[in-house]
Each structure stands twice: as structure tokens, then as C-alpha cells.
Amino acid sequence: MKKLALTVVCAMAVTGGAFAQGFINWQVPVGDLSFQTNSTTYSPLFGGGSTGSGAVGNTANVAGGFDYILLTQADPNNTTPTDANVWDGTWSALTAFGGGTLVATNGTGPTGFGKANATPGGDNGQEVTWASGVTNGVVIVGWSTDLGLSWTGVSNILAALAIGNTAPLLAADPSGANAYFGESNLGDITPNGSTPGANLVAGATAQAYGTALFQLNTQLYLIPVPEPTTLALAGLGGLGLMLFRRQRK
Image 1 (cartoon, helix red, strand yellow):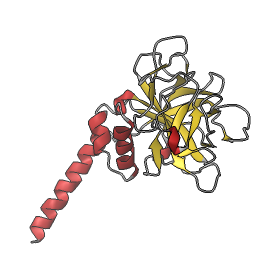
Image 2 (tube, rainbow, N blue to C red; image 1 turned 180 degrees about the vertical axis):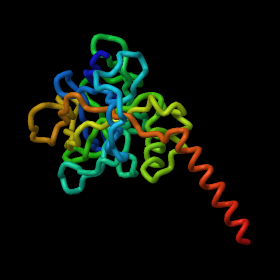
Image 3 (cartoon, rainbow, N blue to C red; image 1 turned 45 degrees about the horizontal axis):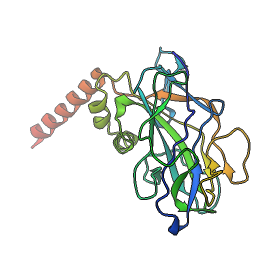
Image 4 (cartoon, rainbow, N blue to C red; image 1 turned 90 degrees about the vertical axis):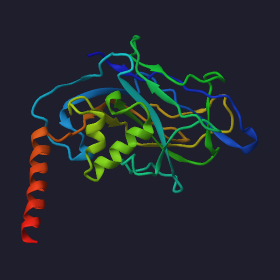
């Protein structure tokens, strides 16, 4: 498998300057953030544990096999967030001012990464919906497209899984062998007031405007799916309980 590394700048035309919005630049250099798939371990976000087999390696260089998105979280205390449960409703997909979610997907080029939702306005900054000088938490998440093509759909699956409901996951990935999800480290960023020199989301060094994302070989872990035999036993157990209740009536 070949390495997938993020080397993209997403930008958007300025559409709301009168509202004093801030600007960030989510350029992610190849040496600051990269991703691997890990099928030896189930996601620690959902119980973890060994799969008993599998491998760890650079993400497969298959066009459209993985999607990535920058999530943000309100940060009134101006500190790096600690909430890794990105499906809990406190994290939001980065959108351009006025709407339009920015989603990136891998390609087959040298970096294994391309961008969907290419936007006008050049590569010098993304206008965001929080003001210059205000800090927000940031994280980049990645998933295999077996889980879906939109963050809304994927986050709904993860939210259901977090409370033990596997039905949405099984509907998306009946085989139970192809669904991967992972997160970068958590950071925070304060946007600046103009597109030229917009503050970078990722970087290896501390920045005056926040804690940049920096995590090589970010793991996209296999998502645990119950074995068919487990589901069958659960079904039989439920049927037995129903029959027992009927006999008692």
C-alpha cells in the first residue's frame, strides 16, 4: 500500500467580508499529517481490541477510497479541545461562509490525495464562520468510503455505534471488513482578518495563533462489526425471550 499524505489547500471566494469573518488556510504539508489503515486493531473509540490478524500500512492508493474533512468546535476557553467523540454534535464540518462543505478525497497521484469540491477564490485562504481573533478547536478525520460519502451520514453511523446500535453500520458495510475511521490529533486555531497569509491549520511548530495539527501516520482503524454468528445468537436469544414471556402469560 502507498502512503496517502495531505498536501492540499482548500479555498473559497470571499462572500461576507462585511460580517468580519476570519480566514484560515488548511494546507496540510506532506511532512505534517499522513494516514495509514490499521486492520490489526479495532478503533479505540469503539471499544478497541485486537482483530487477531490484519496489517498496518499506508492507505491504499485507490481513487475515491477515502474521504477527509476538517471539523471545528467552538472553543470559548481558548484551549486545545479534549473531546474526541466527533459525532456527539459539538463538532461541525468546516463550511464556507454562506454554506458548502469542504470534503477532500484521495486520488491516484504521487501524494495519493486530491480534492473534491474545488472552490474558486485562489489558494490563499478559507473564510470561516467564526470571527478573526476567536479560537475554535480543529481536527481532521478520515474514513473509508464504505462508511459513506458525506460526513452527515458517517457521523450518524458513528453516533449510533457509540450507543451500541450497529444497524446503520451493518447497512453501510454488510461484510464487516472494509470500514475504517480515524482522527488526527486535536488542535485549535484563531483565524486572521484577511486571506493573504491566512493562518495555517497544520504545522510541526507551535504557532502564536493556535495549536497546529501534526501527526504522521494517523491511524484509520477498522470499525468493529458483530460477526454474523453473534447476530444470529442475539436473534435467537430475543426469540427465546419472547416465547418464554408468552408461556408465562
